[in-house]
Amino acid sequence: MRKRFTIAVLPGDGIGPEVIGEAIKILKTVESHLIDVTFDLTEYPCGAMCYATTGTALPEETFEACQRADAILLGAMGLPSVRLPDGREITPQLDLREKLGLYCGLRPVYLYHPSDTPLKGYQAGEIDLVIIRENTEGLFSSRSANNSADGEAVCDILRITRKGARRLFRAAFELARTRRRRLTLVDKANVLPSMAFFRRVFMEVAEEYPDVSTECSYVDATALYLVKCPHRFDVIVTENMFGDILSDLAAGLVGGMGMAPSADIGDEAAVFQPAHGSAPDIAGRGIANPVAAVLSVALMLEWLKHPSTIRGAAWIREAVKRIFENPNLRTPDLGGPLRTSEMGDLLAKQIDQICHVSTT
Ligand code: ATP
Image (cartoon, rainbow, N blue to C red; front, top):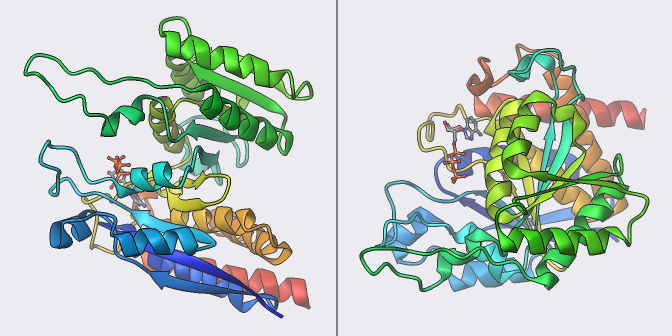
């Protein structure tokens, strides 16, 4: 009997549909080599264009499908030209995180080839870290607060709860245990009471994990260290807004947003999406880098925790590794000539080869 996984696919806006097309191509390639699992994929409307045409960014039917699905695969949401009356962009991906309790934002950062980093002297694999971003509290929790301006001032609140921080830190320690057992808390405990509290809760949880070495680092200093010595980091755990900023910085160390996958994970549901936005500056031209979306599929397959999907995730990573050994095989964001679909085709072919060798 084949295990059937239901995947809700939300391609979204801008380059979202373009990179999701390649991610699905890769998922189907993996599926073709697995005898005991299938993926049931259905696309749903969501995002800025959906808001512009229907007046809602996350339709009820889409949300219900996400609740029913085993996993959610998302492209990118939001367009600068489509805004709420107060000027903010449309961000249903943030609503999904809050509504589904996806508190753990996982952002792996891995250097596949020395030519893709602006830093000198780093070999493949020497930048290998994961940023865990708190996803449901922090400064972003102010985004839906009713703190409208009186014409003179606006105040956004950085909210940290013991429950939210504990579950986040536990996830971070558990991940560190599967890696190099080193966890860095990034905060601003020297200035903000919320961050001093965040650090206190971190210290409490750390006592449950004596096998993981820990350090605390201020967010401003961490920005410096990430550029000067990224190899020092294994797992970083941080507040929502700090994680938002540092994960883009870290993506820049390994080739940019096109190389940055992500997963937003809760206790019962998870969304997998490239860490980048809808990139309207390159949308519709067929030149977006699909690797971040493809690597997000690998995160999804791992999270589904079936022996076959875990094998599929390893095939995808190995395929990216092999393609990236040749620095000429790149999309334009990394200085190469490949179109989005050509990168997808190469990866699919590489997976076929990996599977062919492993079965002969
Ligand atoms: P958001 O705030 O929604 O995350 P953003 O403002 O961070 O979005 P992005 O859409 O991620 O912006 O784009 C930032 C830059 O990176 C843009 O110049 C964009 O063209 C580039 N970029 C993002 N994703 C890709 C990709 N997959 N391939 C190539 N370039 C990309």
